[in-house]
Length: 160
Length: 232
Image (cartoon, rainbow over all chains, first blue to last red; front, top):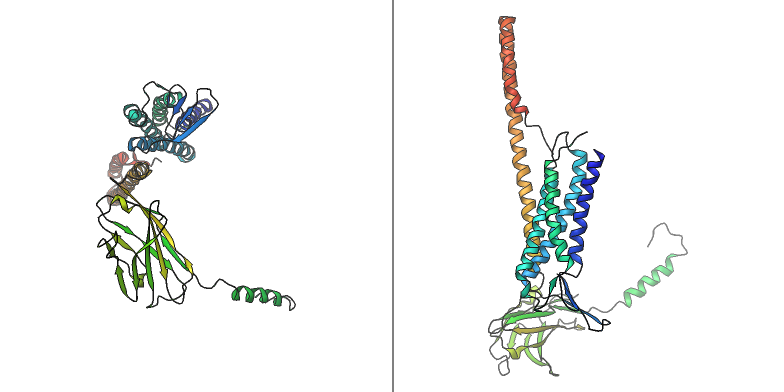
């Protein structure tokens, strides 16, 4: 029982960490010497010594990606908080509906953010040779994990 | 100042107080405007100007708007309001384009510039004098004229976050409200039914005890209602 609880909490915290890292780190699209993310574009000179960072464009689609990533982090944190609340206030046999709903919402937000970014990223970064950085991949990994975590909460019944 | 203070200390405190009152900065007028204003070519833009004055608004109050072109060094006066009468530029670049929309009683000295053009880029200064309160700082607003006014950064961001959070909270509230009303109705129904059953049992118990045992079979029908136990 305690093992189950611990593993669920570990999964939730892992999702939270993935969401935080993916939102903050500057590696959504990388190319030779430059890296862009939701908040700034950084480019390193060829010798590797000078690094310039500029703010990202004010494109509406980029803003909506930023907004949904922030929303996913907010929902995941609220879900963790609600989980601890419900752990102590739920009646025996009850299900963690609220926690699960918020975690599923967080997963949906991450999915929509990553999808919008994939479709529209050419509007604000114009380099032709690029590849997706690890923060982008983390966002996609966080989506099924968040969904899984939310579904587990909805199915789980409180014992003891 | 302090009522319980010993008699020796009040005099330096009082001296400092009087000193600060006498040497307090003579009333100064403070003017407020926006910092920058964006406008589209051909449209109109409002330049707001407001002020704070320690004196009452007098009849001699005067507003002056000056304009300094972008990259230029001189500021020309384009609007003046004095003694209740606005004087609008009739010979310069803003000929017939300025409209006075301010009201001294509301401490508002705003003007509207119609039919913007790229040559209107520059800095506008609002100067307010409210005799006897005439010392003070002016305030400047920079006008930027665009072909199309760009939306400020963060509008879409804030709108998406606010809309989704607000929608989720609203839905949760609605759900809990409906569930609360439903539960209250169920509880009232259950109470009424159990009261009816008690009444029936009393009546049957008066007749005979055998028939009373039959009436107790009514009770199981209440149980489906007990299915709705509260879940948090």
